[in-house]
Image 1 (cartoon, one colour):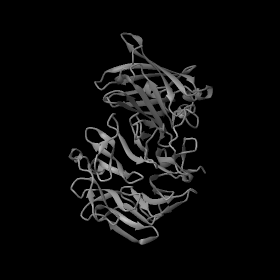
Image 2 (image 1 turned 180 degrees about the vertical axis):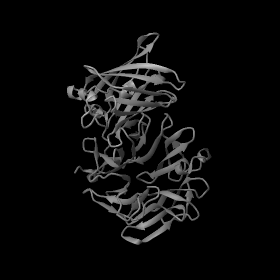
Image 3 (image 1 turned 120 degrees about the vertical axis):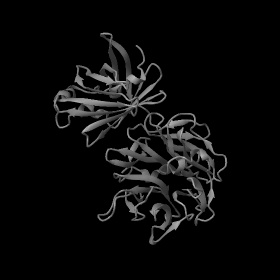
Image 4 (image 1 turned 135 degrees about the horizontal axis):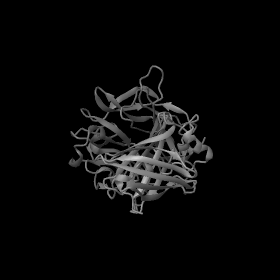
Length: 475
């Protein structure tokens, strides 16, 4: 059987096993909608699936509900093609013909559509694929269950007046329970730290963390539209869209404790969603729009009247990160004309530029000239940050705290890596990457260069960091 050509990775492979866990009652749903006509596909939602082809390429499918479960969306990528082959599929209920149908759109400019027909062992999926050149190809795929977490997809194509085999792939659920989780917890002295990050779910952004078994779980008191940006003094520094009746919509800085309580640090919305605090949360720097400029605002949450503009005048400043010793601040600024990484004393004086690479000066302003956000190592001697060049995308970089010896830590692969953060012992960097087809959380061991994948979820998993495990205890 020939390996499937990238341009023919149509919806059948994006279905990755669609019916496959369907027992008698579920199969009946395909022709007889009940309260949820897409119920036969529900087992796919919230998971990513992987299939491997004979040519070594990997097919990644990630499913999530959209529009209040009226549609199921699949984001599909083939790892190993250049450029990377991608597609998006929407499944919905065809009330006129009383069956599930789908529409598939590809990065190659092709489109495909079809429907599901129940068989005794799974599904038959006939479809018409219209290539970017307008050529129409008839394809049919049979899906069958092999076990609870694996499905087979056998495709054939109509050519020269007959059906010819194309490809058979076995798809595995990437978060299958039998797979050992990669526990990212770090022990420093008597303290145990665990990983937390931001996850895109059906109802918005939520903060997830690793539990004691290394599996993903919701943070205590989790609410929709929250984002963790930092940690200080055993508490999480988060952004929340929760607002009072008369307030405008926006992200507002807050602190989160072990009991799930949220306490605001300021009633004014943040403009770019980054902030840092130190000294038992008595000194914080929060990004805000002031007089049509991006500014950093110094606040003492105990004294709302203490707010003042911080940092170099006549410049846009953003994304502050206080040094571990509290004596200096790492931030982004366009003081020199282009956006670069800078450091300054705690009071905003003695600003010094750390980055200066003209190759990324053309990056759009909303990407801050391709520099940052950046974070200090626990000992304050190094800085890790995201750097973007037009021809490469985003990579993880490392340099000394004085700006010397900058080097790319993720130059050996295509894809985007961003939001790096040091482990509490300074030996690892956590970051998010789409190198495997979807934004997931990874760990980079600095001494060996070994990269370990941590999460296996659809949607985006972004901006990981370590916090005290006591903060992350289950409810």
